[in-house]
Length: 325
Ligand code: NAI
Ligand code: MG
Image (tube, rainbow, N blue to C red; front, side):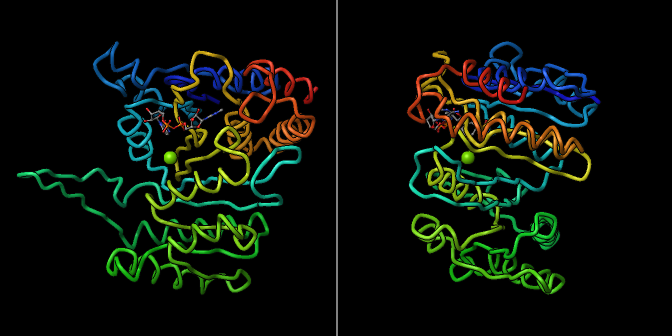
């Protein structure tokens, strides 16, 4: 099974090294194909997403992606669109031993990944800039159904749609309408909705009311960082981009240039991302092993500085590896 590995820029490279330490020590039938993309690739090849990378990626079963820097829109947003990975799955879960604003949080954000304001249709004429927000019935139906199927599979009780249909009557209106149409097919799962602004307050003050969240691209981007923030930060937040044919796995965080090169990035998000990849590819047992090891190491406080510990990125990864064995 061919897996594309794209470390990218900044801490993307550091956390990828950490995740690969774990993967390469598990007995997996993977062949890793190392590829370049990001700010550094742009300097080298004149393109942040070189043609060769895109071609190779399409020959792989899954992509493990670290982070890109300033070229993120041309790399990861483009990859998601090219590979039609329409569902961005971002769990926000509390861990024992991690200092955080809230405890016992367990929600999954399902973000539409192909349209909305991230389509990149923007114009600027005579001092007026304009962006086009595309919301289609087809993509909305697909993402809402994905969210309900995920809820069913993970035995979750509720799916909540986030939108701003009172102001964006056409775009969010369509999304909300489609949400309740699809919800009718899932009688045993509760369906409700909130305005995105109120939902942000609820995530901050009462996150336990959320189970599965489904929302459009830009709102999903924002609320997933918010949700990561209440359970311990971006250093812990994994994500998966799932399509019918391809899947891309990447931490929620970016290149974090403020801490890059120091070897202190938290590898947890990327290691949990690798675990999501294992589960997606059918290696459930290995995925669980990795998660259990991460939980153990976090509970023991063996962490990088962002969580109050004093370990380096690779030291924390070594601890996780030890906990697996
Ligand atoms: P960021 O996610 O890189 O960092 C935000 C904050 O969280 C920083 O203070 C950083 O130090 C901290 N942080 C993130 N990951 C961490 C980890 N694993 N361990 C410890 N602390 C961590 O977002 P920012 O600073 O807005 O962007 C930096 C660069 O990354 C920009 O060039 C941006 O375009 C790019 N970016 C790329 C993304 C991607 O490739 N998917 C996503 C977000 C940003
Ligand atoms: Mg983001």
